[in-house]
Length: 198
Length: 434
Image (cartoon, rainbow over all chains, first blue to last red; front, side):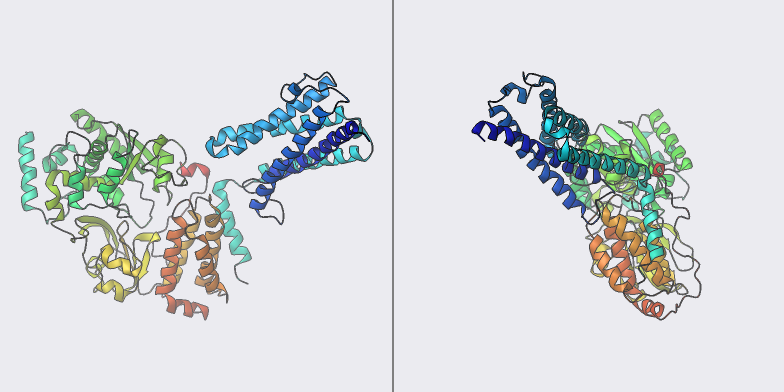
């Protein structure tokens, strides 16, 4: 393995790590809301994990991009980091990766500035994660032959399936959620029934 | 004609300084604009911002909505802000045991509306609202009072009427701001405090309607007149809702510092306990109530406060635990359900307390109630959990003998018929917050 192939392998490996991390971050973000939470975890742990893992994802994403550009085996211009569809190599698939990165940067920058932004602005930009994630998955599968078969395909499918399940759970939860005005009476009925009588 | 009226008004200030009622109608009949002008004269505008504030400070007026905060400090705080303030008269009165604001608005609407204009002038506001209970007849009456004033050209700023939902927390300042903006009457997190950024982000002065009526009187008759009754520290009169043990009572205007025994006629109608300050207030034993006057100086050492002037004497044939459990249950249901401590804590506290009242005593009940009380205290956006816990603790304290009886499966009450007024149907739908 030469220096050249080392970069190439590093880029592909960090890409796979990014995909898995992005899936986990997405699931954590989807599961935590006003009433829902992950079983066994306090809500602040879930939001804390969501935030910290998203920053870890950025670190791996940085490595993924730097190694891909630094690698001399195929030529990807620096411009492709920001401007989609400017790469000569795999123009479409690499371009999708750029789109996913741009959206993710918007989401992360607004999250870091959340204290200074109107909640509605932060929230609407955060919804872009739902576009960024599938675009990133399609980029991975299109740009890399590795993910199209074998256990890496299985890993990708598992990640996507897990995120889809979380979305399904969240949507169902939204329909089943108790309106704010009914929450207190419901709690009182529950407290009466279970009785704080032990 | 105006001169004659003014003279008449001055007479009153010289001779009738200790005479009651002051803010309520002297005859008892509701005062229309003509009657109001005859007794009190024109709206005494000062001609510029802040000019009234010093007079209010000398009078020593405090807020009559419950917190007894010095009115001049609130006026100054709002006038000192950068933006153009909004003034809101608060007559929402969510407390089921209190009727004084409704009666005042019915009896002397023009005194309140004068006060609203004067407060607006004092802080330099250009937008004024009156926030009152969603009661069709009252709203109609206020609309016609405003129309009368428009015809007479009394109001410099047009007053917007806003209806409050029939909820306990509707009069809470941040809930009020949210409702005046057109949203639901739900409490919000402070800071920013309402005087910094309230209605639509403007500095907002919220004054109880009785405070406004007192402002209207002080600006006419002066601080010395105002101080002619009441105590040195807490001057003036205040409206009280009195519920003596015989089931009678009503709203009365009294001098601050009047003995509680006298107000509730405790000698005639003995009480098992006395509730001071409403459902966020505290119980007193008959012995305590017997030697205390209606003033914060007297009540504070006993963990009580005059609040919005609610005084209830619990008849000797009622059980304080049963009555209090009913109130705590009501308060739990009146939670906005926004903050975890209130949403999860109050229902549990209410259920456990109800079980105790029903003599289904669990060994851990008292310990649980104490622990949960500490957990919910000061952890809400508003003071609802704090007030509820204060009421609960005083009940467990004052009725400790009764708690022991209940633990043994007994109760000393002669009747379980409810005494403390609680609205029968608690609205539970979203629209009932707006």
